[in-house]
Every structure is written in C-alpha cells, then in structure tokens.
Image (tube, rainbow over all chains, first blue to last red; front, side):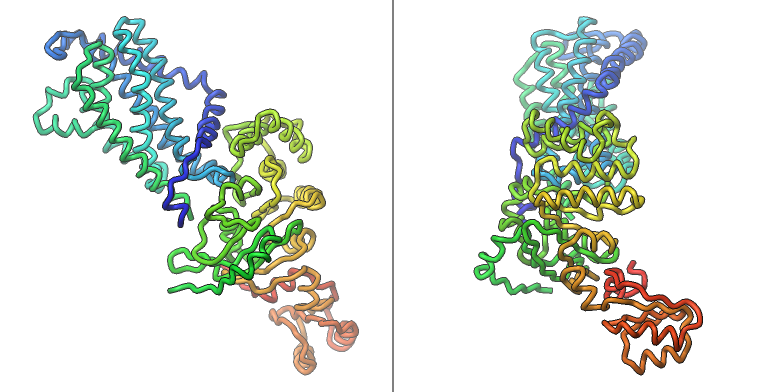
Length: 263
Length: 318
C-alpha cells in the first residue's frame, strides 16, 4: 500500500518521454502536416471567407481584423487538442492495447513516472505544434513580437493542463470509444464558447461566467494578448487559473491511473 | 476477515539472506483470495517452477514478486530486500517476461531493446553492445530493423525473452513463456533458457506445461485455487505421488475394477479408461494384462502430468 500513498517521481520520467520522442522521430514528417496546414485552412475559411462578413472586431476598445482575432484562438485550440488527444487516445492505446505501461512497470520505473512522462510528452507535442503554427501565422504578419515568443512556454503550461485532464479521463474510461463523452461534453463546448470564434462578451452574463470555468477561455485570452501585444496585469489571473488547474488535475490523474494500473 | 501470519522475521532474517526469493504471502481481490497464503523460497542459481491450472494464482504470485501487484498480507523478500520499500533496486536487478506480449509495436526489434535499456539507465554505448549480443543469442540479428509486429510467433517469444536480459539480471521471471508456440519454437526457447541457467541465472517460471517444468525446473510447487498443494523436485514428486509406472486400460472390465479394489491399488476411474498407479509394483502390468485385458492396455513411465492431474483433478478449472 505504501506504493499507493507516496508519490515517487524521479528524473527517470524522462525515459518515458524519450520513448515517445523516439517514436515521434520515426513519424515526424506526418506529424508536421496537421499543424502546418490546419491554420491555413481555418484562416482561409473563417478569416477570409467569414471575415469579409464580420469586418472589424473590437478588442479592448480598439478595432482588430477578424483574422487577427481568430488566429491566436486557433493556436490555443491546437495547444488543447495536441495534449488532450495525446493523453487520451494515444496514452490509452499505449496503456490498454499495446501494454507499454505494463512492460515499463517491470523495469525500475514507477507508475507516477510513467504518467508524468506521458503528460510532459503531451505538453511537448503542444509546444512543437505551436512552434509550427506560430511560424505559419507569423508569415501573415498576425503575431506581434517579441511578446509572441512567450506563447511557446505558455503552450507548455496549457499542454500540461489539458494533458492532465486528458490523463484523468484515460484513468476512468472503460473503453476507447467512451472518449466521445468527454470530447462531446468538455472539448466541443470549450472549442465553441471560449472566446474562440467570437468575443465571450457577446454571450449572456450567465454564459460568460460559465466560460470563465473553461481552461480554454483563459488560454485563448493569454495567447490572444501575447499575439496582439496588449499585455496587462489582468492576464496574471488567467496564468494563475491554468497553474491551479494543473495542480489540481495532475495529482488526480496520477491517483486515477494508479487505481487503474495497480491490480 | 483478518489475516494473521506468523512472521518470525528475526529468526528468518539470516535465512532469507541466502535466498533470491523468500515469499510468505496472501493476495485478495475484494473477497476473492487469489493467493491464499503461500509459502516458498527460491535459492540463488536454481530454476523454480510454479505450476497450476488456469486461475490457480500463478500470475498473481509472480506479479507480487516483481512488484507489479501489492500483496495483501505477509512477507516477501527478493535478494533479502523488501519489495515495497526497495522496489527500484530490486527491479533493476531482475528481468521479467510477462505473459502477454508487451513488446513495443511502435519500435523496431533493435529499438525495443535500446529503449528498454534506457528504462534501466544503461548508457547508450553499453546498451548497443548488449542489444547486439542478445540479438545474436536469439538469432534475430538479421532482423534488427524489422517491426516487431512483423515477427512470427516464435521470433516474438524469443524477443520477449531477450528484452528483460538487457540489464544482466540476477533473477529472471518467466510467466508462461511458451504458451501458444509450436514444438520447434518451444524447444529452441528451452535451449536458450538452459544456456542461461548454466550461466548461473536464477529463474522463477510459471507454466502449465508439465514437460516444460520437468525439463527446466530444479524444484517446483503445484498451485491450485490460490494454495500450494505440493513442493519438491520433479522426480521426487513423481515417485512420491504416482510411482514409477502408470498402467492405462481402455474399456476396463468389471472384474478388473474388483481386482484393483481388492488389491488396494491407487487408481482413477474415468469410465472408459482406468488409470492405475503402479506404486513400485513392476509385476502388476503383466498380471493385469494377462488376467483382465482384452483390448488396449499400456504401461508407461509416470510423468509430472500424472501428479498434476491427480492433485488438481481432471475437470475444467474455469
């Protein structure tokens, strides 16, 4: 039982990260394509197509083009998706179908190290995807520098937040098909209502308050502020929210995965 | 339910210093006792077998030994260390072949070994050297770049055997290593295991193949329903429980049954077949053959399988 009660994380969790990185190196050419083209498609469809209808949007009292408003939100959504899908579907396949975690548990790795390595890896994928997207979007002159560079460490923080909650779902979902549920009830509403496609201020007051619970709302707020170079002290609240979200869901993910893996 | 174990830890401390595994433990899943108070030790350099039908608790036992499952009660020492406290140093000194194939399908044959070596913090240079050695050992050095999913069943099993050897373990734990293999692949694997044994490796093996146990194990236990029924050397167990020979009679006549009863012979009556345990009476076969047999009647050497079936029964276990 002592294994259950005490957290055992040494720097050996990097070995788990390295394993995933080794696999990534084999398929990186394919992994590069979505973050390269997805923003292009979105910017084309929504930014140029829809943007013509929308015109300018008011951001902190100043008008910005719809495409400049939307682009940072696409980065935030990608941070969420990369970590969340890595630590749900991909981690579940490694845990359940490939028995990768079982094999690791016969080595000097602890469960906590395996899960930590997985979550840090999910966040790493968020950072890689963000770096690619940032490059593409910067070519359109939509990112303000140097503040835009802070989006990379922010992608890591956001990646841990969404990876941790993804890992929590992996800890409790009975079959891989059941991930539809958290995606339908958690990811999709966030994708639509976190101030991504329209300012959250357009929502009725109660919905605005609800949107503030979504971690994506805070991530969008931060990426947008850094992209448009309008940094205020107010942003610290969103950083704090994300940090607290990590501090809550990371241990919960560890506990749920221990329950699942220790037989 | 309260589980009480007499645990003469102080008296035993000297004793389990010399053993690779000292085990006296219990495991419950809810109300079900999967391992219901077992007691065994494995000496350094020996091959120790855990035999039993499916569901006997073999896998649960070895999982506790290598720290995958926590025990519910009791004492378990590996290399004289406590698995709950010193799990990391114990795990770095053992190798485990799990029952299910847990090779990494995302990686090539060689990468499987190299990535595994990293889990043990083995430096890359040494890992490459060792991987090369192991691939030669299992005759897969010409397939180093292949995907593990492209390997045949026998090759996969050989890989599963090679991977836990990457850290030069002192103790190798094998959970049903040859299940589902063809005879050629089994014999190849046994040969490799015998080579490892000769090299002084301690082996803990679970199996439900009796020929495998007879060939490989120095000592073994037979488990049934979470308990150990017997312990000993394979040859001793056969002699003790079955004798040298077994007589099998097809469609036995009634007067044979009467004869067996009158002579107080140990036997098993399966209806169409009567199995008589010789218990050292060499003349018995001729007597029975001459007096009672019209059809099939054979005399054969007693095997571990006879002991196993006699002790665990012939009906399906699950």
